[in-house]
Length: 203
Length: 338
Image (cartoon, rainbow over the protein chains, first blue to last red):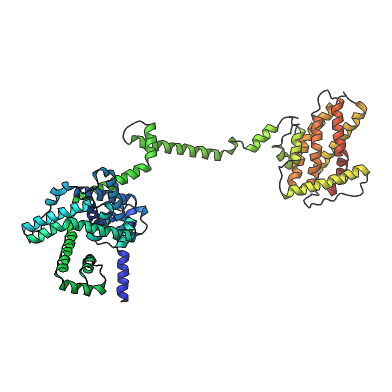
């Protein structure tokens, strides 16, 4: 056990805890490793928030550029992921603020991009079509939630973060998060359930 | 378990945040109630859809490529920001496009630094080129009377000090030198105490004529050394002052005092040297005596060509107040106490 403990400690110390420090010193390789580890979850969060892949990539790039410029504000390297989510949230909020006249809704013009995604070869063609349709419905339903509910629904239901982590990212109280999540689920269910029942009947 | 209770628990149950003690009751209810079991299947189906919703979202290779370009541009921007002042200044001085202005400005700065260093180095090697404040102040003091011809029989120590000596032109300056804040600290306080004691003793001797009680200075700094140079100077001064004082009673106003003036000028230069010598050796009694003598000599030397009775009377009064003739006399007869 003692040997295992030593190995475990050594593993922790050799893990990328020093990556942010190296990135602060201008180590691009360290920054690339951080990007490789975190960009997917950040990109998916932003995609769920804005509903467009090209825009999500653009805002993800902006998020990591913001991180690169502001490494000095990262106080706890162990919370790097939450820190990046916080930047991503600010970036998306800034985007919505700049386009507030567009009602902050998911852009439905992304249908073509959704349809262009590779189909699941394991499923029959009608199932693939159904999946695409359900994805569009989910994206539209997300876009009709207000920003706070969309954020907590995305982080909790779609990305499985804990309430504590979401509170750290958003700065909201856990009780508010639970209330928003409950209402978000009801709204999502109201919009998705008809399609879900139809798809079950098709099956 | 009622159906409404079971339906309320479904979200938490599917989301994995279900309390274990209620799990058995819920699962047993779902096994018995077809309606709730169907609701459970729909919630599970929703969760599956949500779980798969983001799985297919992947970044394109362009994301890292663009980000790498962005951080490289940011690095360049930061470097430019740190040198922006140099670039702006150089481009204003050398309005040429490209990097030429920066190199030219850097060369200019290096050249200026080398020139400054050479200038400083040359000054350090030739300190005489730049007169210090003390020299300038001393030069400004030189007015009247003119420095008398140097005597060849002065001791070497005095000769060496004569080089930087200068005559003060007014009595006020001499007074300032005697009582001004030039000397500070313990030595000055002791000197003043010694001066006051000596003055009290001298006042007593001159008023009562009793010289049996010798002056014993309180300070150990008072030197007992008395060289022949100072003795001769005091003797000459006493003779001069007696002559000046006696001549006044006989000749009166309007008489020629050119001899006394010439003698005074000669004695002033020596008096300054001896006073400084006494000051440097800590001979406070001699310094005190010569400091009192000096303004009187200067006043005599500065008498106008046509001397009025008023001028002579003022000097006489000053001599009486200072008791300078008696002091000079006792300085010669009792040198050991000084």
